[in-house]
Image 1 (cartoon, rainbow, N blue to C red):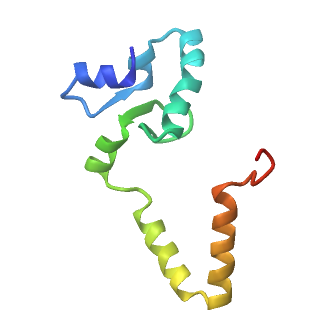
Image 2 (image 1 turned 135 degrees about the vertical axis):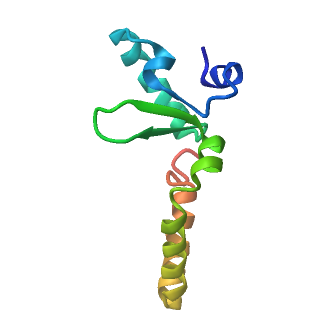
Length: 110
């Protein structure tokens, strides 16, 4: 069952535990973990875990942000303030670095 299908069938639930989603079978838990991380990397789901080795809860990302807010909001605000305080030379260097990271392999394959 896909994560999206699970939430469509269980509209009242905001999150689902990893165990509830994949079951108690150890092999199934291991096999399902990498695809779940891939969904998280694609920013489709949000994974929440209170402490190491505790249960992992799966949220649709937009639902998590709606109910819990953006966990990075303070960090983004602090970062923006620091950028504003940079002198022109450092701002120029930051722009160059950001440009390089847009296409880190550059012309290697072009």
